Amino acid sequence: MTRAWILPVLLVLCGSVIATGQFRNGAPVAAAALLLLFLLLAAVNSPLVFPKSIAASEAQRRTAADGRPIVYWRPGCAYCLRLRFRLGFQARRLHWVNIWRDPAGAAAVQAANDGNETVPTVVVAGRPHTNPDPAWVREQLSRPA
Image 1 (cartoon, rainbow, N blue to C red):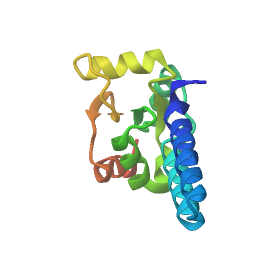
Image 2: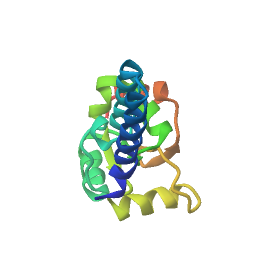
Image 3: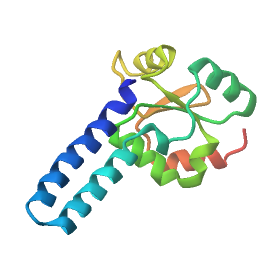
């Protein structure tokens, strides 16, 4: 199992244990609601909510061809989730690199952030921007390449 799935699996397990306790205490509705809440939290923190990640080298090759920004992210990052959800369907137009799966991506983020793995780091026209406003990223997508 990769690091990306640890948090979602823990959320499902904890939710199951808590829901089982509620069910045994005679509160099946509360048990179902808690289990649903934990499943939702697990889904939001899973890699499934993000567009398919690619390698940093592939993202750099593609951005050189089409001019689209690169987003370096990692699962479980609240700021990455905020960026992803605020971009909506436009998020699929970006090149997403999961730094936990790609050491070259992690190195690129560390180089841009004084050795720290601060994400999301969005690279636009070769310049890194750490945790930019989603509206600004959307604006960059509307500019010609």
